Length: 177
Ligand SMILES: [Mg+2]
Image (tube, rainbow, N blue to C red; front, side, top):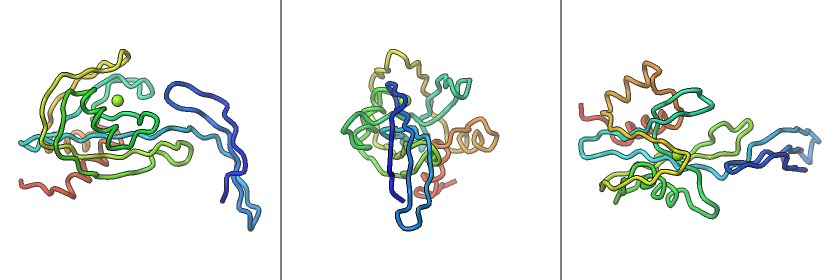
């Protein structure tokens, strides 16, 4: 398949929407889609020396409520996912990490969103002062792996990137009890 036409119909600070067409040159099979064009995001799973995980809580308008999730942020123009991860972790939580390990990279919702997320585990941490954006009110708290597991099981955590990061982290670093 090849994209044969793309027309921007909306743009805001976070993303653009295009109306696109794609076709298979061999068969002529063609589709039309509206697509949210997005630079991609970095997600940070900070893990401390007690193997606890840092989650943030903020009001998410599409969800209609405050939710606990891994800290994350959009890539700035020209920024690599790892650079964005380092910047966003410091901005949202104040933490800096010496060790970064890629856990996963995935399409958030490939039916209509171009956004790709890359999750990093951040360890060997140093605390500092958070510098959130003007429109961000972020509460941060450490949770044990058992607590996170229970929150996912009970539906208290229902955020996809948080679930992917947590379970990828478990596979890479199996629990010692
Ligand atoms: Mg964020």
